[in-house]
Length: 273
Image (cartoon, rainbow, N blue to C red; front, side, top):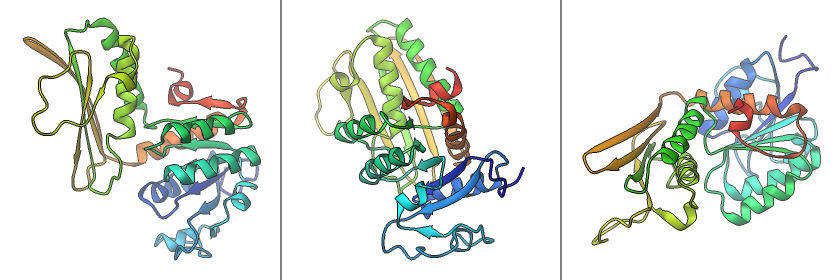
């Protein structure tokens, strides 16, 4: 099969000029299970009207970058979206209107954004995850299981590192891990999150789940979940060295969602975990 096979699901990539947009372009264009049928950028972007492949410095792909997401989504079976919260909320409504699977890797979503996604999911499939990689989702499950096994004498700390251009902290993956730890403990992360330490903070509050963020260079993504008590520590770690793992996971989610009923899903569903 090739990208010209019209029986393959058509994929639209939003934020096509970004780090993930470029990686998604490579992964989808090389796939024998999907077609790249659209690319979306914000109004006024220099790439609008250009062939996506040429704009990215490669060979032509026969896909023109547009600032009209509804037009692009109308000819797609799935939308892969690693953009920003406000854009993702807009895309969710339009993808639902087009009945396209919406794969969301956007981080930094707030409660009002998640409420908008829930509304859209009544009409179409939304697969959302703080991280699309198999390894991280296994780490998430392990974090929950370890938190279930250990009592409150074990402190939980999550340390994450990313490239200097990342705009949100803690990372979506770190929050996903924190939520898993909280679930294992039988508590809510919102009530026990500690990610603002600076100055004379006093002793660590028992039961809190702490977060620390490192930003520098071109770090793709590193996450440690630390369980610490008197005399011993358990450290669960995942290191990402290639952004393609996230793109491959997102494509897997887009394909998985093709025969599913409208609703909200995550990578645990996609991976059968």
